[in-house]
Length: 313
Image 1 (cartoon, rainbow, N blue to C red):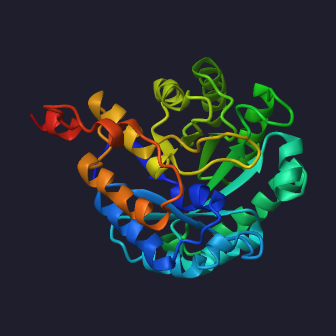
Image 2: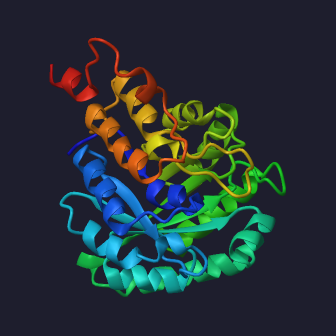
């Protein structure tokens, strides 16, 4: 399906990693299947980390295997290191999302190694991926956490973001993602950082990942859209948060982001009414977790027409 913008669901990983309640495998798959049916084209379904660190992902293999049966869905998973990447290769995941931090302090606390050690490990991942048959080779995505601010170091130099973006590209990344990990960003900063990165990495796709910690998430999305970014992470009900950002309300709300774009005439390929119905899965399995979203609260406006219908007319 041709669409102007790709909205990628990350709640099953970035959201559930912050939830103490274990969500049963069948419920995760119900969420994935229903959201894919609503038109969400890419879902980060799990993380390949040791279960003792994040018990929520003890079922990573089952979730990945069943998700790969969904026609038309790009199945992604987060990996912290080469071991996780090898697991993703063995399972046949479509996309491997690796993340390191631009902030040295955050990288040490998050993955217990220096930025240069993370970069060296990413080079190993790229070699592993290149060794796969081309027909089954996954997309390798390099992520730069804290690119727009760090809860330990504060402002992060734009030059550092560009340096590591170029390093990931040269190491073999098929695409990059720039996250506002702790919700420090504002639209002006987003424009500065994304313009600087895009100017240096050429035609390599660059995606964005924003948290709505301080209420600037959708404004930041629009700023990145103006820079030419066409892929954005979001989570159903704004599920998620960061352990290094007290009070964080999680990722930008998938439903609100899709509505904003569709109302602007930007085709996301998502059926908003069907997407809102998927929230029932989260209400059922996580009754004590707060879900966010203006669209869920107010509903679609009278006479609302999705972007695809306007384009067809």
